[in-house]
Image (cartoon, rainbow, N blue to C red; front, side, top):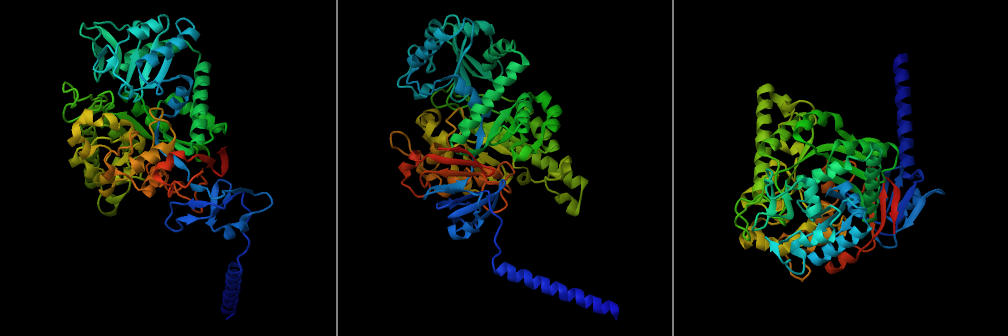
Length: 602
């Protein structure tokens, strides 16, 4: 009886306590003051629960509330920083799903050749640099594209200039000028001399040394042939001390970070870096000197992957600033340099169908290692043959591990997801792996539905469509171009996820031109490149936020604005979702906020 009375007293107390809690909740107990409040604007959350709000509150690095101005006012305390948006647009922090992060920093230190209107401009730029350089010092530049010059150089081979004028402009300094795509480069005589390249030098596998009618090198090195010059440059750089090497890399990281933040990016996905870069990145994070988030793909020689993949896998390291959970390979080259691997020859140069760069055996081995080590596999593929070969390798890998899982397990054990790291048999569904094809620019119609069927993410760059459009028809012809060139709607309607980006420094890292290209596909002459493939503005926004986060397994912590997620926010001067389409490029970034901290303000 005494136990029964005691139990009744306990239950009574619980009822009273619960009732008091309900009354306190109904009275709206004052929340704790926030560290940061944004209010007075249009906040597009990319969250279905509350898609558009006026204000949000942040404590620490986390969003704690979103809602109308009046509701969020309760979070304002004496030490709260309040930013009045004054009607501006705030969105989830933009994520560039494919950049070459340190390349952005390095490009800032070298000649910027994208502004050249013709070959003569480039020769003049190099000549000016040679006057300032020490004898023997390398002159580097990036960004030239022969298809975007005002006229074809003369003389030329396959539309590319010859090195003589460049060599006269810089007789005492090696010159190496990387194509905008990164898949070709141009060298002067001094650089070819340093590399030991002569008329008898043979083409390396997966590349081409372009030669004139007499068999002399023109200076153009396509795809894997670039390694000949790159190795000579590396030998020269090897003279630096380890401290000098790290100092240069740190400067590149800092320059790239500041450039990205100024363009509204809160996360960048680096498309392939070596272990040495990963090690310095972790040091920078430990020193709390990385002002944005970096998601990085490991890239190195195949024989090293098996050793280094377990060592370097890192997820949301240091305040969720740094992740390495993907490996990068490249199965072909770029369309502009005719290096993309096509099923049929190029329409404007029928002697070639492009190049297979990393061998099929290499990519297949990387796929097996990715399963074993729980890495995403990200393979560069631009041509329709390159994309088909990658999809085939992915499909074969998934099936092989489904068969292993089936033979080694039964029932519920066979349905273990990819989260079961370390056991290949646990991975039986490609959709769990979220493997990616980087670029996916030119597809055969039969391969478009395979992306969704296999769960393969199309990591594409909106700006590439309008940047490449002027020469796509020449390279592919109208039938192939219409069937599979930058087919965003065809992929999305088939159920595929598209993550957007810029491929910087191939293009400017600025997401606004890429967003504009995604929704307009409008060229400089006013024409529209296959308008039926345009994204809606919400599709484009998702491709730069929640879908880009999903492409890195980060959709639970970023990519939309809701309580509990990281306070990564981009604020634009104009409403990208409603302004006239042609006004989109005039929008500017007002604030870039990472983890609740304003890292850039205009």
